[in-house]
Length: 221
Length: 221
Ligand SMILES: [Ca+2]
Ligand SMILES: [Ca+2]
Ligand SMILES: [Ca+2]
Ligand SMILES: [Ca+2]
Ligand SMILES: [Ca+2]
Image (tube, rainbow over all chains, first blue to last red; front, side):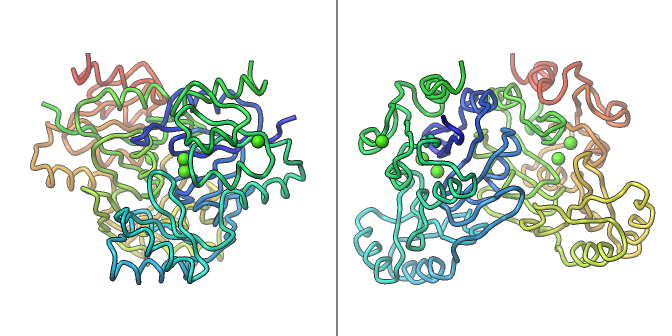
């Protein structure tokens, strides 16, 4: 029995330009099961989504670095490493921080030229950090900070099993939560790797898959 | 000719529990005119709404204290006064700060018992601060920091006239932008005072008025 539905945001509830699907909003509002949003975005942006979509559940921001759990904010990682990393590489590569870094507390986000990713990845590894690509921006994270960490935290808090959880996502930074052994699904726009890792691949895309996925797993009728 | 539509958020795009109306989202997406959100909420929450609704325009948070204008964040007031005010009155009244204060940069928000509002208002006035009630929370603001200030800023930036602007809101903290001499409209759930100040009062409520208002002013067909 599914007791928790974990949703990625960008590309899973939204289209490529990040406009949210009103079908996705309606699907979440129709669901009786507890919902969690787990995203690379910052906590206040996810907090806004929680309030304005209107659901009961958890939000994990910055790929699991910080969360709102039962109306308390909990921080699981620090931003010192990611912040000095970004300061340093901005000096000798094309890497540039993005607007939402103002609200980050455990990671940094940036853009960079594709052909410099090897140098950037190597520098990250030498500092016990790593980089993940959400398909919308690059994130520099602490070791162990990923969406899989977030899902394990929630399983622990709720005292449930992996097979009580359904995860839905579309791209690289979702892989850590697709390899836990939970139930899993993805929209038609997901990466090949996520499709291979999914129990169910919807034919619908960019948020319009939610009703289909929820029906497939008997969560709504 | 209307060149800017200024929208309050809570109670104007949302219902009493703050769930956003999908009709309001669709109405904003159908509008060709520039849009601004002006709210007592924090900038990252409004930034999320801008991204996920997907519109071109301005966001003014904290009742005009801070804004995102052409991808730059501008701060027009400071939080020092509001912050020490809230610290002090929390010591001898029921006033308590709320979660989103973590992200406030120019004001503070709080809840308090109704019967203490006289003491709290007097203390605010003695510090050149004032309190406004959004209907969802109380805001402690600097003198001159209100939604009217935000609308004047945008008129200045766009180099337009008051009659090129349509403001839409529902409650006390919208009054400062309804008294500027712009065009104005409100949902059926607006306060009596806002209804009296409006050029057009819609029969629809909580976000479902937007299509009706936009049609009334010939902004969509
Ligand atoms: Ca995604
Ligand atoms: Ca995401
Ligand atoms: Ca599997
Ligand atoms: Ca309002
Ligand atoms: Ca508001």
